[in-house]
Length: 402
Image 1 (cartoon, rainbow, N blue to C red):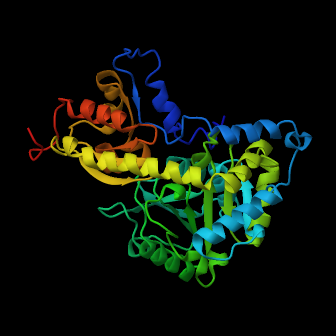
Image 2 (tube, rainbow, N blue to C red; image 1 turned 90 degrees about the vertical axis):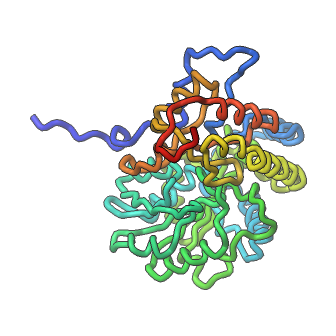
Image 3 (cartoon, rainbow, N blue to C red; image 1 turned 60 degrees about the vertical axis):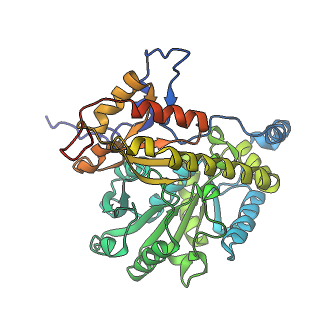
């Protein structure tokens, strides 16, 4: 009897955030030493009161509870097109916009439209694990694209990995997990490479609202042929604290969105109506509030940078910092996947190990952690660093500080 092949989900690794949350099940944290949770990049506070009131009013409208257009509410598509045009100093139309049930679905819908069984997609490492998971479940090969010592992907490195089966290069900027804001030059070089080879350049800009740079982070929307090459992804979850309402977006050529409509209609029919209404209200009313949220996140990033010498003195290295994330190299002998569990019990810290963002055969993951610090204020950052600097674990290598 022939044994059945494992399903695509059975062949895909366990989602990292739920796995890490299981590490704290049954663990008690004293009131004077609560858990410091830097595992997930999601706001824990609710949307601002004015937005919640607008959502409550929308609940009384009958159309809120019905199916909507597959590619999103026309008013939201038009509003995001205006916002995108202003932010990138380019022309973006409503028919360039599709609204999805979160940015993860935006990625899934996009890849379903451009890649098939056995195709290849370049993912810079460390990668966003949900991108890797979806490619696995779709039967698309993830080709690791190593980054340099600043966690930046290089066009020449990517060029050597392109084959006749390559369909896209995927970037996240500001980066998850590395936090790095990709320079415009890096994006331009990879855009040119993708265009030369007839590939799609997918740029996930979930964290664009927390970029430390003023103005447009790149000019890709103004480049020749961008509708044939560039696909941008976005999430309303971080800017307006709408994680539970699942609202994301794709900015791409109308011809590609026609293909994406097939995926959307089959999987979700439409993004949740209440979330779309909330996103529209946010775009129209919360620009100043979002600017304040950005200022606070940037201040927390500065606090990470200012306090990191505590850890540097113990052999830690800050590899990347920006948006919600710090990507750090630890000095210890054991692998980060082992140390992650020890951190819960011995330091009261929940963080994701670098092994969750790297191929299994890449030893670099064992040396790193991602800290998602967006929900820590300055006092919380101090607590995190105090606990980490107090760790007295065996060190790796003879060059590590005693």
